[in-house]
Amino acid sequence: MSTRSVARSGGPGTQSLLPALSRRSFLAAGAALAAGLAGCGRTAASTSPGPLRVGAIPDQDPEVLQRLYGTVADAISAALDLEVEYTPVTDYAAAVSLFRTGDLDLVWFGGLTGVQARLQTPGAEPIAQRDIDQAFTSVFVVNAGTGLAPSDDLTALSPLRFTYGSETSTSGRLMPAWFLREAGVDPQGFPGGPGFAGSHDATLALVASGSYQAGVLNSQVWRSRSEQGAVDPAVVRYAESPPYHDYHWLLGPQAAERTGVPDLADRLRDFLTGLPAGSPVLELFGAGAFVPARASDYDRIEEIGRDLGLVS
Image (cartoon, rainbow, N blue to C red; front, side, top):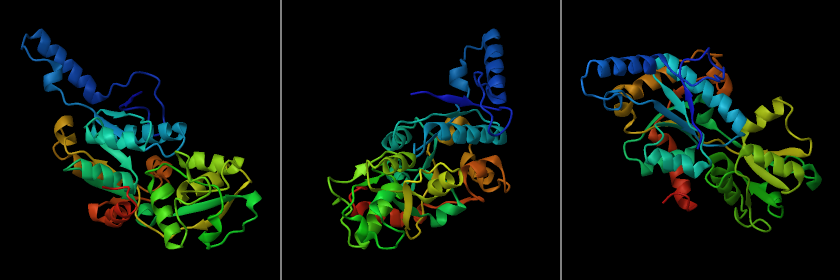
């Protein structure tokens, strides 16, 4: 697993090609050297705080994620004067597992994976969500070859080859499955069984190619790719779901002690919710602002996850 160490770079959005060395880690290294020369008998490993290890569920193309979370890591490092590492993960389950074992301190989870991670990691604390996560939606798409025009009737999807995103995606599986069932469609009963593309971008590609006749992805990715002109004309927006709470930052219970920042949760929350409109971080997240998040925001997600057998 590769790790991108990020400290104080030239500014949000820049990609450093040099080994990352923050002001904090530079000073810590100097202090360790001085202590060694003085013969104090203590090592840097026993006295220096560790970096803040940031991760995220891999819901989009890796290049998009690297730019997004590289910028986030740079911004947090500069604001908190803290060494920060962004570690890409291979799938949603890996993000939950690495958070549980303490290998990741601060993770951008979807609603379902955040619930899973919090239940498996006592003391984990929701920090913030975007304004758009307070009423997030999913978009059902179809291949133009189906002849289906946009509609609110989800039952028309039942005879089609259908793909979700990741198996534990809130917007790409959990909530769409719930809304399909509410409409009278068996969420597992598509011809040949449903597919699992793995990410929202992959869902678009599979529906465009005709490998699947229909699928579902989060509305933010749909709108972003549409505005970029990156959606294949073969993909037609069919329907949009009702709103629900989704993505949020979750902080591990040992992060403050390990990084040497006792008030880390408060400082992170203040930083994220205090970002000015138009900041590079907000633009990359497609949000107008971050707002405080509470565990109770995701009670409905947990209830539906248990009902569908995705939370135990």
